[in-house]
Image 1: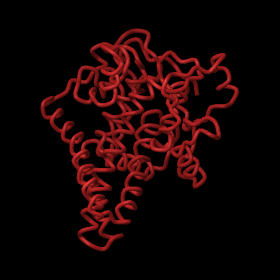
Image 2: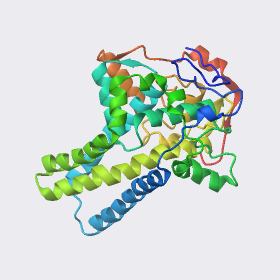
Image 3: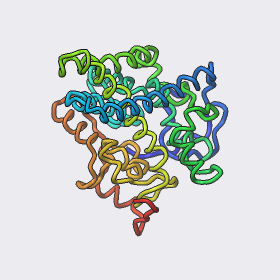
Length: 332
């Protein structure tokens, strides 16, 4: 597969714009008007603040020795499922179509990603495709560059952009393939259902593992609010930190970086410069030492016959895109 530039004018085909820098700036056709902006901002603020309240409860819980071993198990299980839903599902499968999957696998990834509470699947994918079309240029929904100072830029890329609707992607333009998929359109419409399921699951899991209403409630705390806090800010860090700090080795026309220490928590997403160099690759870690748990999940699914047509980038193709000397930015 080859990477092509995004079209210079709105596409009328059923295919979404390809990843890569657009030859012109964004037009009105690239942006999605937002209905009920004040309600959207309120709900976004609620989802942003509630996990911090949960963190305060956790601090009290630890202080009073009320932490159960079941809480850690619930957190690990829910984090793994929701994170895979975002990294393998929303990102590599639905956004970049890095592999094909059986319908039930595709459905499970869509549901797990929705339960992560990072927004409805089609909006998430549309924003990310637009990010690639205008990466670190005008039209990028969440670039840390082009703002009044680096701190303000990092804050905008990390969380501020969620409250601003001037560059949100037009779903009709960027996700016509998903809008035509009946099941994905259903998951998108019923986003609230999967949010509630994503909170009910750790409650039930805490009850099942710990055997009491007390462990069910603390399971909801750890597998709900704490999991949201960690996973959300790991995802946000890909938008902010991975476009500002880290290493570069490929010839790309954006500011993407590889940030090694974040790869464990992000399941390999922080090999972000590699991803921008080869957006359709199913594997973001391109060396054996670049830990990429999402890649391992995809490899496992392929061995089980559940996914196929996995996009891989040959060493020869990688070599052609290398710059003469790796460049490093502060903070690696």
